[in-house]
Length: 298
Image 1 (tube, one colour):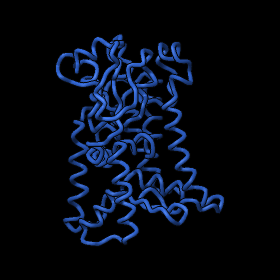
Image 2 (cartoon, one colour):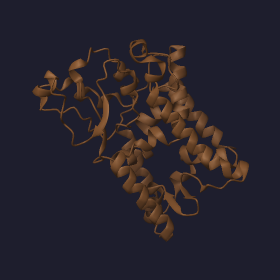
Image 3 (tube, one colour):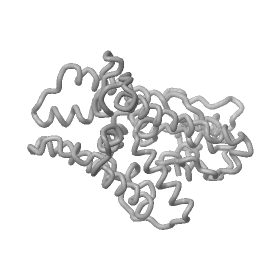
Image 4 (cartoon, helix red, strand yellow):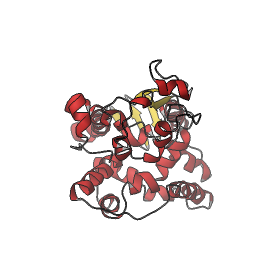
């Protein structure tokens, strides 16, 4: 599990200490809660550093930020967003194209707090078994969210988008948004491990496509140190992205994880007692000279 504050991975905790084994997780929580706090300061304390919500916001009355998926839906519905909204969408597009689209999922999206909590509780309760839905389903749902505006259904997705509902609900009062949020929590808890974020969320699919060529990447630079404990595989919200990085020696596979599904959450770095993983860039296929696996994999 990506973990809420999971008390697992004893080997990493013994090698790095508790803080070292939770560094990136704690930074993610600070990021997620800090972003929520900035939005809540206005309505709760009258301090309007950021106005709006995750769909569209204006920071310090200067910096516009627009959800590019929302802007695309508006365009497909036959309307033209305001110039400031288009500028905000362009800024967000450039940012996530550089740092990795699914950074949004791990570091910004408030639903990640809900699904991580469900995953943590699922593990604590020892719930086993899971329904099977292909991870490609999220791309089909994404296609549907873009076809609906073309078919004249307007911004139909935004009526049920749990990210928008949760964020607007926290600011203006949750109301019926509780139903959607609770449904996703129960889905991840009782029906399918990592069900929403890993299999169904069209926003995750969109940001994954957006960040396919991003510069920021996780790299298994010291893969020869790997002792096959599989802690990284267990903690990764998209575990399928890790296998080639560790098991690709001699197959022409470099150490950098290039899969667009990677959320750059950093949990594999946290839980690895052997320091196999680091943050790097997509062009750094170099492995340390004293790493025999690196020499073989170049």
